[in-house]
Length: 601
Ligand code: ASP
Image (tube, rainbow, N blue to C red; front, side):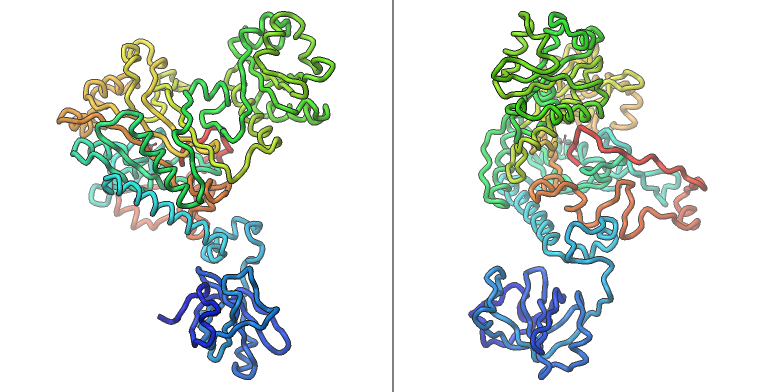
């Protein structure tokens, strides 16, 4: 090794020893003819003293931040008053006798001391510099520790770590595939896996009853702050299980990793909320339970309240919902009215409100509350003196839900409910099996087509598919969907019925999934599993707001890599080899917008 110690390990007990350190120059200071530098590596910082008596003056002059230096010398105790109790190595300094520059460095493209505030584009273009910063290194240490703990825990529970192919056939999870041409089979293409879903089910048929893998997945879709085109999942599958068994393993796993990484105790079992309940009470299928703000429906009262805006919305097939905001009745009128912009942004016509004061109800909705329906509304809201109640009415239920979702988030922030170091897990269950395709009206799987329907709803699979519930569950942490899974279909005939319900003909089903259909007839045990989004978990545990911060070399929102410039054009010769032609002026796809509902990428 070119060093005897790291920059983070020398202490008072090393005084008198000769050592050699290698590190980057963090800071340089001049003091009464002496030069002090802080030498930095992954493990910490050590102060080095350079005296003109031992080190050549020209060499001293040429030192600059971020050069890589090898320094040999003697460890000495820092004089009293010069010790730095905030630094682990703050009792000592290295008095240099030999200095060698191992790697020069020109002026830097951005100021390191600017921390996270520096231009993100520049940071990711020079990610290798950005990652030298201790706060960035801590994120990646956390990421590594998380993966280590996940594996440890699962290996102790008999899970076997198995790999699945990257060059494969489409594995649908509701996104577009990334395609890869094959030179040996010109004009034929592989798809990169959207998940190892089908392969892990085949492992169950093969008898590997507990499988796990930390695996990269690829989904070609519009990006958001919490999505990347390639992302990492902890994927697992278990045979001979029902929902409770998978849930129990994951709760134990989460409690274990949170305890090991943050020291926090996580209470288990986690709260379980049905999908319908989550949408009603929290206006989200990934509720942030750090806030106890809750929404209630008053559509049934609308006709009797005598308020046209409310009754009109319900008559048109929409809804009216409200949210009690404790204490906000005392806010100045302007502050209450400013909330309207949030719901208007989501397409709502406006925000209705009333408050409860010492002298009774006040605000625009108060005058509709005299009668019986009004008393029932006040009772339902739980309104108390000092509280505010906000209402959104719209002919579209979606608009009501989205508006209240954003409003709830904003108010939770304003009321100080969103504490970054609090971790609130919950499960969302009883998802519908299918959604309605907006254009064709056909059922499309909410999750993927291998999810088992709820046994009580099986008879509706053909007659009312949209009413069928799925045996699916999502893991939610602080308002982010960090995982999702289900009990799978393990009977061939049921799998065929589900393919048919989503409009796949028997021939199509065979050509796409014959290997799965085959496997299901050769002794497939009941099975189920889940996948957790590692990037999101690390993001939340590190207190970051974007998954780009916890991915070493992430993509931009346009799916490009600032460091390498990928994707790029390739030579005509390369294209010819794989039998491809590309359009001369490919049209750029429109840039995405921030969306509401999350997923686990
Ligand atoms: N394959 C699913 C996904 O990636 C997870 C699962 O159902 O286990 O979303």
